[in-house]
Amino acid sequence: MHILGIILIVVGAILAFLAFRAKDKILALRAVEVKPVKDHLEIYGEVAKDLDGMDNKPLAYVAVYGKTVSDSPLKAPLSNTPCVYYSLLEEYEVEKKEQYEERDSEGNVQKKTRTVREWRTGSSDIKFTQFKVKDSSGEILVNPAGLKYDLAHNKKVETHPVQQEDRGLLGNFLSALTNQEKVIAHRKTESIVPVDFQVFLTAGIIPSADGLYLGETNKKEEPFNLADRSQDTLIKDLQSQQKMMNIAGISLGVIGLVLTIIGFVK
Image 1 (cartoon, rainbow, N blue to C red):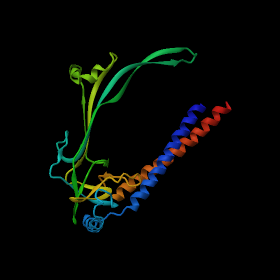
Image 2: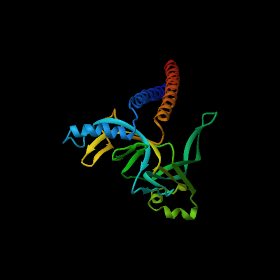
Image 3: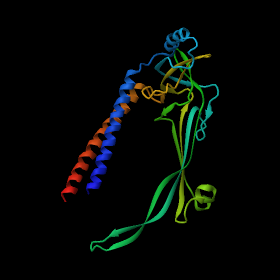
Image 4: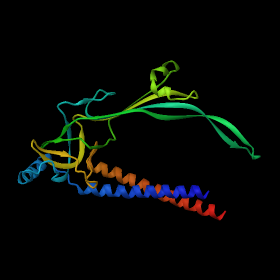
């Protein structure tokens, strides 16, 4: 029992640490000021002129809120939606028989069999393209290399059962399975950033020969992130996550401590 208690204490400590990290993210989000694109271009355009020859080094850490624009968008594989980013995850649900031991009231051990199901990753694909963020004041280019995507919307999921006669179509994936396993379902999950969609972006503003663009700063405290919701909504989401992790962490820690004490006493 004390081993379970120690495990719960460790999990509780991990959740408490994650809650602390969430607090840092909230403070960082509050600190960055969202300005119109035109203001960034004017302020840092002058700075770039003064720093002639200092191309490709971030001038500042900024935030913008506007719509995505692209002259050559991608096509999302499931929804066929024009987009600047998509991820596609393919999974297979596997059903298998497994044996386990159960002790009866008289202490005798019996071997039993149960059916379990689990989802396994078949393949994943991520594609992105260069785009611009546009608001009512202007637009600015984004170099998406290194960009992290926080997407709560624009997700499409397709799940289909796999008939016995169709199993041969799954090729290499099925060949890796044992005779006791069978694929019963196939699921595809698509997440996208559509064209002409409102996004919140935090990034470094960087000069180049073609003008200013938004990109990665390579500093942990200055994340290069895109979210499909506003700054205020992001902060509220993080606050909710932080609260849940704090409650769960404290609860698991207390339960773990009690179990650990009981285990050592016995």
